[in-house]
Amino acid sequence: MPAVSEPALPHTWRPLGVRLAGWLFGGALLFVCAFAWFSFDEEVRDAFSPFQRATIVAMGLLLYGAGYALGRSRVRAEETGLVVVNGYRRHEYEWAEVLAVHLAPGAPWAVLDLADGTSQSAMGIQGSDGARARRAVAELRLLINQGYGSA
Picture 1: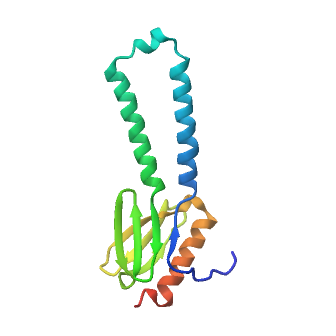
Picture 2 (picture 1 turned 120 degrees about the horizontal axis):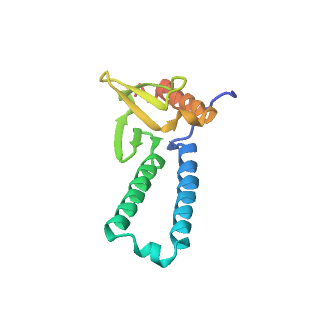
Picture 3 (picture 1 turned 90 degrees about the vertical axis):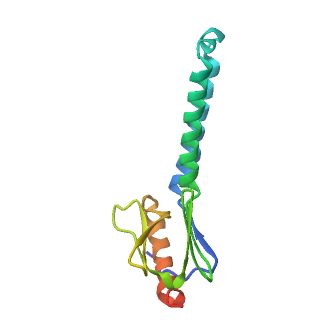
Protein backbone atom coordinates (compact mmCIF):
# COMPACT_ATOMS: atom_id res chain seq x y z
CA MET A 1 0.00 0.00 0.00
CA PRO A 2 1.42 3.43 -0.89
CA ALA A 3 2.45 5.83 1.84
CA VAL A 4 -0.46 7.50 3.54
CA SER A 5 -0.41 11.28 3.77
CA GLU A 6 -2.29 13.40 6.25
CA PRO A 7 -5.62 14.44 4.69
CA ALA A 8 -6.54 18.11 4.48
CA LEU A 9 -9.16 19.07 7.03
CA PRO A 10 -12.07 18.91 7.00
CA HIS A 11 -12.11 15.41 5.56
CA THR A 12 -15.00 12.94 5.41
CA TRP A 13 -14.87 9.15 5.06
CA ARG A 14 -18.01 7.36 3.88
CA PRO A 15 -18.69 3.70 3.11
CA LEU A 16 -18.67 3.01 -0.62
CA GLY A 17 -19.90 -0.57 -0.89
CA VAL A 18 -22.91 -0.05 1.36
CA ARG A 19 -24.03 3.04 -0.52
CA LEU A 20 -23.64 1.34 -3.90
CA ALA A 21 -25.49 -1.75 -2.71
CA GLY A 22 -28.28 0.36 -1.28
CA TRP A 23 -28.77 2.29 -4.50
CA LEU A 24 -28.34 -0.66 -6.86
CA PHE A 25 -30.23 -3.36 -4.98
CA GLY A 26 -32.80 -0.94 -3.61
CA GLY A 27 -33.48 0.42 -7.08
CA ALA A 28 -33.62 -3.09 -8.54
CA LEU A 29 -36.04 -4.23 -5.82
CA LEU A 30 -38.26 -1.21 -6.40
CA PHE A 31 -38.23 -1.83 -10.16
CA VAL A 32 -39.07 -5.55 -9.79
CA CYS A 33 -41.87 -4.87 -7.29
CA ALA A 34 -43.37 -2.11 -9.45
CA PHE A 35 -43.10 -4.28 -12.56
CA ALA A 36 -44.75 -7.20 -10.76
CA TRP A 37 -47.56 -5.01 -9.41
CA PHE A 38 -48.38 -3.47 -12.77
CA SER A 39 -48.12 -6.81 -14.55
CA PHE A 40 -51.00 -8.16 -12.44
CA ASP A 41 -54.37 -7.72 -14.04
CA GLU A 42 -56.83 -5.40 -12.34
CA GLU A 43 -58.75 -8.29 -10.76
CA VAL A 44 -55.64 -9.51 -8.90
CA ARG A 45 -54.70 -5.98 -7.77
CA ASP A 46 -58.25 -5.43 -6.47
CA ALA A 47 -57.94 -8.62 -4.38
CA PHE A 48 -55.38 -6.87 -2.12
CA SER A 49 -57.01 -5.18 0.86
CA PRO A 50 -55.99 -1.66 1.88
CA PHE A 51 -54.30 -3.17 4.97
CA GLN A 52 -52.22 -5.51 2.79
CA ARG A 53 -51.21 -2.64 0.52
CA ALA A 54 -50.28 -0.49 3.53
CA THR A 55 -48.23 -3.35 4.98
CA ILE A 56 -46.22 -3.71 1.77
CA VAL A 57 -45.61 0.04 1.62
CA ALA A 58 -44.60 0.11 5.32
CA MET A 59 -42.13 -2.75 4.78
CA GLY A 60 -40.65 -0.91 1.81
CA LEU A 61 -40.29 2.26 3.87
CA LEU A 62 -38.58 0.31 6.68
CA LEU A 63 -36.11 -1.18 4.20
CA TYR A 64 -35.48 2.25 2.74
CA GLY A 65 -34.95 3.70 6.23
CA ALA A 66 -32.40 1.02 7.13
CA GLY A 67 -30.52 1.46 3.85
CA TYR A 68 -30.56 5.23 4.22
CA ALA A 69 -29.19 4.97 7.77
CA LEU A 70 -26.29 2.81 6.61
CA GLY A 71 -25.63 5.03 3.61
CA ARG A 72 -25.53 8.25 5.65
CA SER A 73 -22.94 6.88 8.09
CA ARG A 74 -19.70 8.83 8.00
CA VAL A 75 -16.62 9.91 9.92
CA ARG A 76 -15.62 13.55 9.56
CA ALA A 77 -12.32 14.95 10.78
CA GLU A 78 -12.39 18.67 11.49
CA GLU A 79 -9.92 21.09 13.08
CA THR A 80 -11.81 20.89 16.39
CA GLY A 81 -12.43 17.16 16.52
CA LEU A 82 -14.12 14.16 15.07
CA VAL A 83 -17.78 13.80 14.08
CA VAL A 84 -19.08 10.22 13.81
CA VAL A 85 -22.51 9.57 12.30
CA ASN A 86 -23.74 6.01 12.77
CA GLY A 87 -27.14 5.55 11.22
CA TYR A 88 -29.34 8.20 12.78
CA ARG A 89 -27.02 8.97 15.75
CA ARG A 90 -24.38 11.69 15.71
CA HIS A 91 -21.40 11.72 18.08
CA GLU A 92 -18.94 14.60 18.36
CA TYR A 93 -15.53 14.16 19.99
CA GLU A 94 -12.72 16.58 20.62
CA TRP A 95 -9.37 15.31 19.39
CA ALA A 96 -8.15 14.77 22.96
CA GLU A 97 -11.02 12.31 23.51
CA VAL A 98 -9.96 10.00 20.66
CA LEU A 99 -6.98 7.82 21.54
CA ALA A 100 -6.86 5.32 18.68
CA VAL A 101 -8.71 3.77 15.75
CA HIS A 102 -8.73 0.06 14.87
CA LEU A 103 -10.09 -2.09 12.08
CA ALA A 104 -9.60 -5.72 12.99
CA PRO A 105 -9.48 -8.29 10.17
CA GLY A 106 -13.04 -9.39 9.43
CA ALA A 107 -14.56 -6.57 11.49
CA PRO A 108 -17.60 -4.89 9.95
CA TRP A 109 -16.34 -1.36 10.69
CA ALA A 110 -13.67 0.65 12.44
CA VAL A 111 -13.72 1.22 16.20
CA LEU A 112 -12.52 4.32 18.04
CA ASP A 113 -10.91 4.00 21.47
CA LEU A 114 -11.94 6.92 23.65
CA ALA A 115 -10.22 8.57 26.61
CA ASP A 116 -13.03 7.64 29.02
CA GLY A 117 -12.25 3.93 28.52
CA THR A 118 -15.13 3.25 26.14
CA SER A 119 -15.13 2.58 22.43
CA GLN A 120 -17.32 3.85 19.63
CA SER A 121 -18.12 2.15 16.34
CA ALA A 122 -17.29 4.23 13.29
CA MET A 123 -19.64 2.82 10.67
CA GLY A 124 -18.44 5.34 8.10
CA ILE A 125 -15.33 3.19 7.61
CA GLN A 126 -16.68 -0.21 6.55
CA GLY A 127 -14.38 -3.25 6.59
CA SER A 128 -16.09 -4.53 3.45
CA ASP A 129 -14.48 -1.66 1.51
CA GLY A 130 -11.14 -3.49 1.80
CA ALA A 131 -8.08 -1.42 0.89
CA ARG A 132 -10.15 1.76 0.88
CA ALA A 133 -11.12 1.14 4.53
CA ARG A 134 -7.55 0.30 5.54
CA ARG A 135 -6.37 3.54 3.94
CA ALA A 136 -9.08 5.51 5.77
CA VAL A 137 -8.02 3.98 9.09
CA ALA A 138 -4.38 4.79 8.35
CA GLU A 139 -5.26 8.41 7.50
CA LEU A 140 -7.36 8.80 10.64
CA ARG A 141 -4.66 7.14 12.75
CA LEU A 142 -2.15 9.61 11.30
CA LEU A 143 -4.35 12.54 12.32
CA ILE A 144 -4.74 11.14 15.83
CA ASN A 145 -0.99 10.48 16.21
CA GLN A 146 0.30 13.72 14.65
CA GLY A 147 -0.93 16.23 17.09
CA TYR A 148 -4.66 16.39 16.59
CA GLY A 149 -5.26 13.74 19.22
CA SER A 150 -2.96 15.40 21.76
CA ALA A 151 -4.28 18.94 21.31
